[in-house]
Image (cartoon, rainbow, N blue to C red; front, side, top):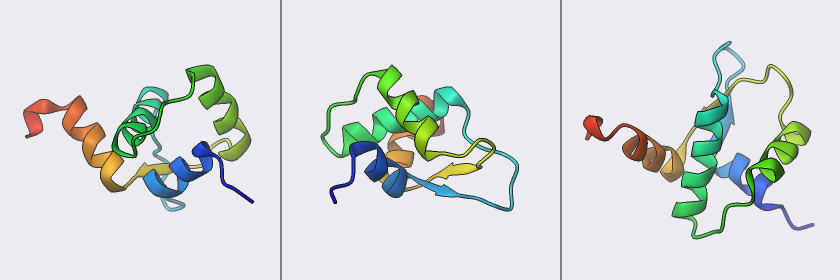
Length: 83
């Protein structure tokens, strides 16, 4: 079975952190997705499609952290003073 773009995004750019009660806020989560699309050369799906897909894949209260090249791109793009 082929994984959807959203499944690949979750696998490659996030990881669950069961020991924390902190998670990505909505703006950061969608920004990470657009960064992942950029670094993987994919076209981002419309934002309503993203949120519908995430509501089916991420449990309420599930704490997610960012990882990988998309995380680096997001951080550099969002916080240029860090560089």
